[in-house]
Length: 485
Ligand SMILES: [Zn+2]
Image (cartoon, rainbow, N blue to C red):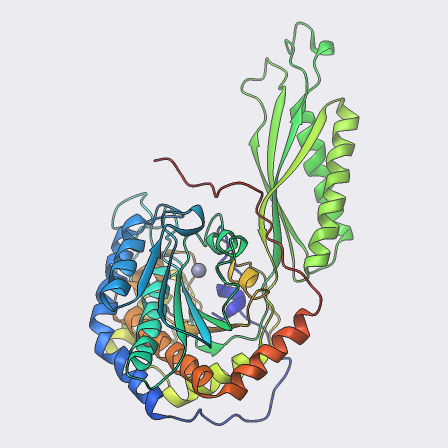
């Protein structure tokens, strides 16, 4: 799906389909094919078997946020074998790394993800059947994401080594997109500061250069402290933190009517006492706020603080709001999207076998969506009205011009963050999308090295849109929350 559906979504979000075109620019011709670009595309083909094997390993490891030890290692090891200088364990995360090759300007980066989602284990089969019941699975296709982006970086590295391209290429191994937001911590430590442009892609149910933004989000823990008492013996001595939590969530739900239609607010209650005969002294709510504009999210955050204080006042408890993360809205680079689109046209659509289309249709049948098979083509360049979702890629888009493309790896309209994505991502449908993604990224990166005017235009748009805004990560001070186990 396009960006809106796909952008993954720090912790499992996902919108659904796309809506319609806002702009329809004049027809765009396919990109030029230079010798360096052709050589880079050949390089992807030469490495395709290795990249597929890496993708399949990461698929099978299915490691979740900040636990991607084997997944990060298989990618970093391959980068090292290919001649990159690899810096492992960056920004306080053992599974984050940066692989660098070349010297001087321009510095072009490409980002790869490799974290899985809990509880969506699935075989590479068109019928829902876990590989291991209750285990994690690559329901957002990040096994393909990391392998393809690394493939593109290697293709460029080989052209720099051969003297066909000049400059530096960096592969960013970015963990924990689905939770925590590894890129935000890497951004906070300045890892993207020297990059002239950075590329990323995402697995999807269609193929398109992305011009749609993503939602800014702020996540928080809201805690209430009251006073415990025997709920029957002396309840008048108690002040219930759970009452405060209930009033707080009620207040959020009433506020819902008085926010922009683009705003999203969702919460879960993490704690509200243990047994009914003890007045709860502690209650804890996890709340996320989103909107397409970061200013709107900031306004919602200010109102949320008032709602928490009001709930505390009413119940004679105290409230504490702790912002523990978030991401910015995506700063879309239309000039970059145009380059990606031109290269998608140059490559032409992914071709599927009858067996692959039958596999896709069986998944569609089993998930109750139209049995149309795989998307074969390139969608037009267009801005879209999206349904929601946030990504830590968006934070990077405020530090360096960020070019983003979606490539089909899963059947049209099959549910995302769900077993169909795992199934298709572990077989030839996903592999084909992964190779196509590596190619469109490599071809577009080749343009940025070979056409200084194109890179300058990408940067000029970035500077104009960013204006005076200063990026600041939402994550709190201190190290990332790396699990101990
Ligand atoms: Zn994702």
